[in-house]
Amino acid sequence: MASLLKNGTGRRKSSVARVYLASGKGKITINGRDFRKYLCRATLANVVLEPLEAIDKVKAYDFNINVHGGGLTGQAGAIRLGIARALLEENVDYRSLLKAGGFLKRDSRKVERKKYGQPGARKRFQFSKR
Image 1 (cartoon, rainbow, N blue to C red):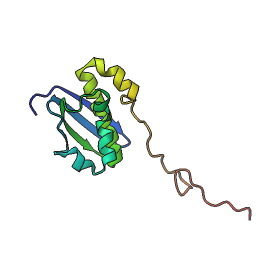
Image 2 (image 1 turned 30 degrees about the horizontal axis):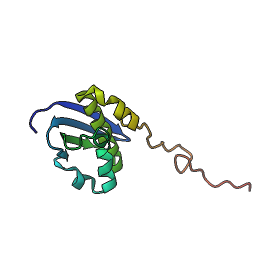
Image 3 (image 1 turned 90 degrees about the horizontal axis):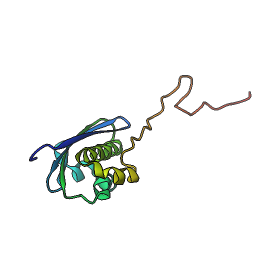
Image 4 (image 1 turned 90 degrees about the vertical axis):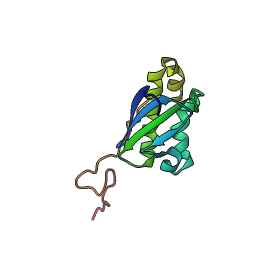
């Protein structure tokens, strides 16, 4: 990476992504690997690229991303939020485009805890009158 410009942090479920943005040619690395190889599925790779496609700058920036925790879907959502926040820090004019796409919202949904006296978070044991 040439020069570090901006950074952003994204979170989803139990995943945390630290995104470092630099001007470049569109290279995205996640934990030292190419993002398409790391995420394995085309749908998850598209999730990561959504904020860049919204502002039409897919090939304008390089990203170095460190992500840990959770699974691949949560990590992809965390990376998307981190990229959007880094782009917003780079240029404030992107705010309207990113906000319209819903990329600046943190998805606060998490796994509901299991309650005592029950087999799961919502599941109940079978009821019988007798």
